[in-house]
Length: 151
Image (tube, rainbow, N blue to C red; front, side):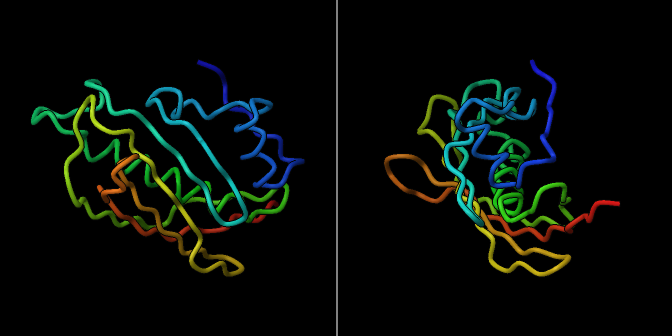
């Protein structure tokens, strides 16, 4: 595992693209859970993961907390792509709907996050997890994030 280091001289979009290109360090949580940041554009971020046994709950389905973390990552990084250098954000509120179960060894899960509304201090974002290949929706979330101005 590597230490997370953020180059505050880069914009949020530049930080996300550095991670994708390999020039930046992925966050430790992504490495721990097996997430990959696949794409980042202004106001959008796409993560994916292969569901493994380690991700499941006692019922044998991918744990809701894992799915929520994937959704929160997609939404948060979508917000992050809108930030100028030196500015950060935090999640204020998160709502998740689980639509169907996912199982270890099943289809790769793709979480697409996007900013719905960007204000000066608050941002509304959403994300949806779909099964790669079938496009079947697995979960949907919305989030409100707070922009943290540098001191």
